[in-house]
Image 1 (cartoon, rainbow over the protein chains, first blue to last red):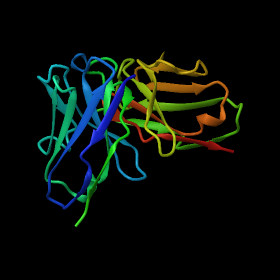
Image 2: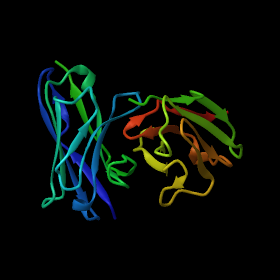
Image 3: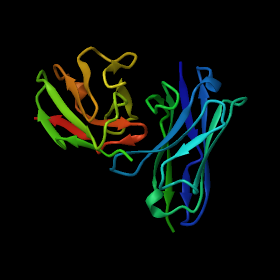
Image 4: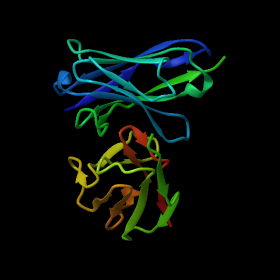
Length: 120
Length: 103
């Protein structure tokens, strides 16, 4: 069974940083591109970026490029999202998701999400 | 950057009715268009990818069509569990969603 489990969310002050993790199991993680998506309270979905299966190339939403960094460890079957220079507008549930076809951002499995709250 | 517009914003229907809603892209996206369902408090679920391909385990009452700039998701006969928000997506960009609620 495919499982994605996010962790690392919490309360952080404006200007702060946070590193989110996503533990993958039930599939051959190194064969799949992975994405991060977030959802602010009561709002829609916002794709943040994705990372190629071998970790060699990442693509980002323009508005987060330079502040957010996606990485992975294909030995430990883990995906990461480093968040920096956080603002209150970054408050959201952050999901990791698997791409059914690499690079096309069709997301067939999602984690349950981890909540990031940016507040002073 | 492609912008996706969904209409209507809200659709009020009864179980058993046919639901049909639209996603329009600001420029041609070919058939690179997917649809997701999100029930309240739950994780999004992929329904359709490549404009018309049902994802694994998705019932046949869900179908997608279209290409270029105009796409449609159709639910042939609404089941109680289908009342949710539906999002279209192209290469990472999500539309604002259509909420289907019970009439």
